Length: 288
Image (cartoon, rainbow, N blue to C red):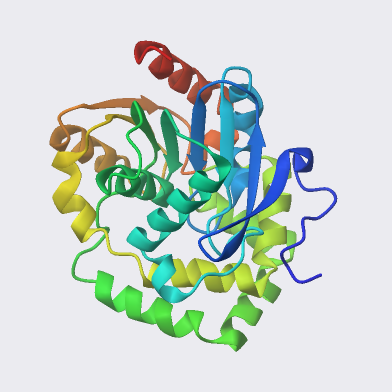
């Protein structure tokens, strides 16, 4: 296998397809009928992260969940295409091929930043963006260039990515890493993360994304965001602290903040029903 073929036991593989767009071969899961909802996963994950929610959302929507470039089973992209703007442009091209016009965009972590960028670039004008533990503000302004440079160096090292992949394959290191997000990840999700982190290409793509990530420009333009912004924040998130969601709620006029206790950064995998209820309520409020 080249690393792009889908394993036979991948969650909901029957909804998967491979699509060519923006010079890449994408893996995307599409299901259901109704208004289009785009789901954008976070750094180091894949569309598998959305499966628990997608199984519920497909009752009311056409749900589109791609793997970001190089992650999951989508082809690895050049470094410049792994920037925030590059990712947004590539996803817009993918949606054009799919004939999709998302009425809602749901983004987890870095996926929320991509969702906002898609709207600010004028690619789409959905009714609303749902940010799940969204990473939309710079984490540490002084340290960001250092981490970016380190990620560039590590992403360029095949030896490093091989070592990370080899270390991640055993179950316990992956479980330990997921626990550090503050979440109690279901076994099916743990199995998928083990599969992904055992692929040097997936590890390299994750680092490449980190190396080219710059949230400063997004931060400066958030006041121009047109769609309603629904901020879903988990109180045990140790990756994107709840304080970031609170700051976004203060800074973005049309933002609404909803918090849930007892869940971590991967809360949508732990308790999908709550998040789907929020999406359905928002869709109803927006006339969908």
